[in-house]
Length: 87
Image (cartoon, rainbow, N blue to C red):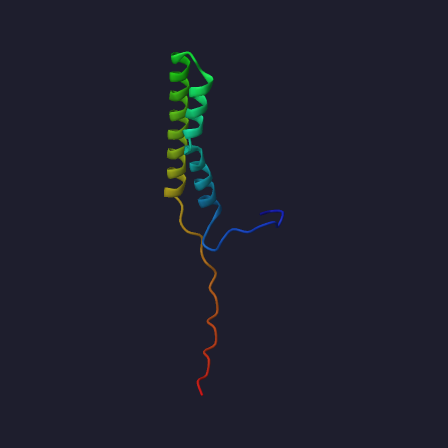
């Protein structure tokens, strides 16, 4: 945004963007799959699963907390288009 490569959609503020980015950490199915492949020791696999679920829960709670406290960004008023004259 600062470099001018893009802009936020109308009605979206930085707080909403941050909240949605925080919820991106919820996706844990690939982590569970890799854990199943990586660890042969059941105790290590269980520890990894607890860490994955804890991280996903923390991500969800953080995202919800950020989004719950945010309001939509004000949308700039647009001038109405002139009415077409009928003949």
